[in-house]
Length: 466
Image (cartoon, rainbow, N blue to C red; front, side, top):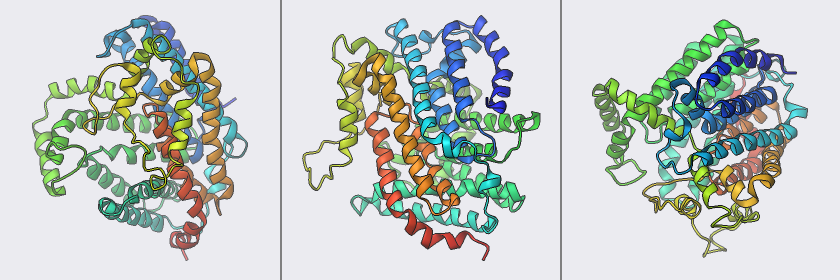
């Protein structure tokens, strides 16, 4: 039994039950709490950066499934009144139920493959005193600015973007170690917090709201260094959560106007200078009102929650469209092992077209917008409401197996953690189509795994005190 997890589950149980009793969806609330309790028991570990990463990744999936159940209990609004495409009240609850069970299955597969060697690790066993806090931070900054420069070249070198996306994720493993080392040895904390603040400010003025990434890794870092969960630690987590929520609401309030300004109304690209972007953001923030923030609550909930397309798909599959018998998963894997140079007729990934096929909503796509149906929905379309569950155990086991490979084949545990931390971004993906879930994992795993020893030989010495 996980004592720390049991303590938090017990702390949450009474207020959750009270909200469930007075809220409009009692049974769904109990299921949401049960799936959350399972995630806590399986993955909540103090002073374990690997399991902290997996816990937060699955927690984000849980939010995508259940956030409107929680919100509906607080404000007494039933689930069916919170969705714009609402068609069938029972389908919404069915999608929520199936997704919670599916998440548990995925988590079991992931735990099954990682538990033996990783669940009992702590930073006390992982810390190597020969590494320097300041050098790790400096390396993180060099990686951040270096990849920012290289991304400028992606439009001129075909295929560079995929490779850069894979290796750029490694900076988050480096930052996680910087946070852990700084707090473990109580060194360079001011420099660490300055880096976090600058990252948030810079991320807030970018197109894709990247400020949330540094906050998420900071959450993982906090869980990786605390000895026990007490009132003061809960307060720190709560305050950081409030800051994250407020930043999310502010960003949601201004993002449409800000993105339109950055791109000139021409899609997901930036055509103005960073200084102009900063000035525009300041102008938008000065004009922000409490009414805008209030409107942003629903928009933010819609952005996080992602069971609506699943519920609509339940109306169409299998009544109008038959189960696909694994074709979606097979195509998702094979797509990335067919280089376009050898397969010139290989199609393109069009999330909206895939979503329209199974929801029949006729959503806008073609590069102007992207609407994903979600990998859990794809699992249902492929295998149906029963067979999808063992498949999701298998899918979780695939991710766990790949994480195990990095853990076992890395030169040191320091580097194993660097390679594994990016899996937060590969697993917290309830809203991604199966082809992108598998594609992101494959295009990260293959180049990084093949280059892991070269990275160690070339860069490990720069992290050390000597």
